[in-house]
Amino acid sequence: MEASKDKKIFVLGAGLGGVLAAYKLSKAGFDVTVYEKKAKSELGYPWHDSVKPNTFSDVKLNIPEKALIKKQRLSFYCLESNNFVKQGSKAEKSFDVDRKILIDYLLSLAEIHCKVNYSTTPDSLLVENEKVCGIILNGKKLYADLVIDSTGCQSPFRKDVPEKFMIESEISPNDYMECFRGFYNKKPNALDKKISNVYLKPDGGNSLMWCKDAPDPDLADVFIGKLNVLTDEEIDSFLTKLRSKTPTLGDELRYGQRATLAVRYTLAVFVADGYALLGDSAFMEMPMVGSGIESSLKAGYYLANTILSPFCSNFSAKELWEYEVKFMRNLGSNFLAADYLKRWAMSLSDEELNWVYSSGLITENLSILENSDNSGKFNLKSLKESNPGFFKKAGIALKRKDILSKTIKALNVAAQAKITAMLIPPIYKIPNVAKWAKKYNSFIYPQK
Ligand SMILES: Cc1cc2nc3c(=O)[nH]c(=O)nc-3n(C[C@H](O)[C@H](O)[C@H](O)COP(=O)(O)OP(=O)(O)OC[C@H]3O[C@@H](n4cnc5c(N)ncnc54)[C@H](O)[C@@H]3O)c2cc1C
Image (cartoon, rainbow, N blue to C red; front, side, top):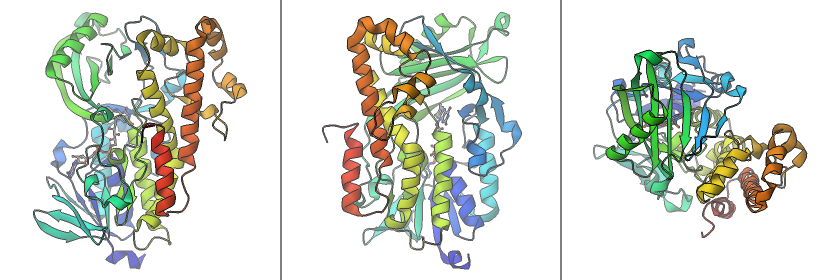
């Protein structure tokens, strides 16, 4: 490990995966510095978010028990319909994690071995001879052997990477959801009433809102999100809608803030010579459904392991590719399939969407994708086993053969997208990576 002591690593942004990687790498002897634009007290979100139960043990983190609370089962409503789909009992095995405690805990570990510069925003990446070799900070060149970009979905650094590495930097505004999360009082006569409702496309547009119980029994947790832009007037109008559906929701906003959510599939390429993206900066989350906490932490863990392997010595794209392959095979492949389905569902008419949704063909955890075999086709036997109600519901809907066949076709394309993502070239050679990336992107942008 002595050799690593003279290797310098910069982590840009105190994203979850970036801080985890900073901790692991600095503990192993690398000279690691984190540059975070916010003050320490402003980091993390003042609320709980859901995370799969094994996430922390998978990345060997012992997070404080007080950070975890049991997740509630949610009921999903679509459009104006009064039918809803209730999350399976599996949801109760998941947790919600306190976002402030989580980031504070990670930072407390990282700060044992590495320096974290808060309220510090680098100007740009430093690129020389088509290699990322550090950052420019306040006009000064600072050299590093590797720069890890953990600055979230609106990373200003992706665009600085030399074009030959094929890292997509022009992201469509429709790949973001502007959102507002607020915690309101519950009306005193309604404190014992359970609220756990999620509304998809409540205004017929590309929007999502929920009202559910907060961990504090006096409060309701409200989320309002819309693709691209969400104005203050729209927030007020969604709140009015939520109040009409949830009379227990009070008017007093106790705390809350706006935020941006990434809702697209993972970038096809996220490593370059001297540079790696992770977490939201590479769009590592299941579009619309979440899982960004798990993805960011696992990406940080995989990246640190790749860097710590005896085969990694100069942080070239070729060496860092092992990290990308691992992420794509374990997580990213499902995100591509889910994004294909999300875009397909958004292109349906309201009537078709209501049918597809209530038929159970697409479950909220998209577990149906697990039923594809190696050729990307569905295995009807396992589909039947994992979704016992599927054939009954599909049978009832046989009168709508048109939608049924459209849906099966979309599920098959999604399964093929997953297989394509999993067939990522195991070795980094630019022509092979370019060919694969083109195929990967074609599931979302067939015109490319
Ligand atoms: C309302 C809401 C609800 C969510 N719910 C869930 C959920 O239930 N489950 C789940 O898994 N995920 C959820 N997510 C997503 C989750 O928050 C992210 O996917 C996850 O935090 C991973 O993000 P990250 O760690 O990569 O980056 P981030 O958490 O975005 O961190 C990026 C950091 O970089 C810093 N930064 C930005 N620009 C610069 C710069 N130029 N220089 C230096 N620093 C910079 C930022 O200040 C920030 O600290 C939710 C997000 C929101 C907003």
